[in-house]
Image (cartoon, rainbow, N blue to C red; front, side):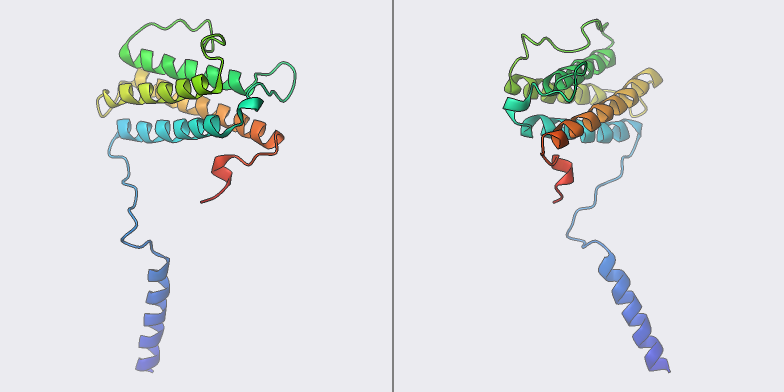
Length: 174
């Protein structure tokens, strides 16, 4: 009986231990404060948008699913515009919001748009890193709102991918 119990305990322990991650695999460190938590989420959605922008075919940048909606390029110019707004707000600068997207003339090509999205994400992240560990409520609220905003546009852009028969990067698996 004692031998059976010991065998059962060993079998259960082995089973449980086999489901735990290997110590060699680095586990992400949980954010230590509000600033780091915002930064994790900002960079996560920003990275996803950059990847979408990089991988969508250039010849499809003017695709739009229906009349009256933005093209793929317009969506990204809009996102980058508001990311720059977040950075300016974090610096305490006044930003003109009338345009609602970056200039189609200045940001006409895929390369220019991808670079604008990348820089806008990086600039806003850099400004967030300068904030105290508990950013002022106005700053934290702005980042939270635009993490959501970027998530909404990410979802829209995934539909643009699917309508073009392309599997979005995050849906491809490892």
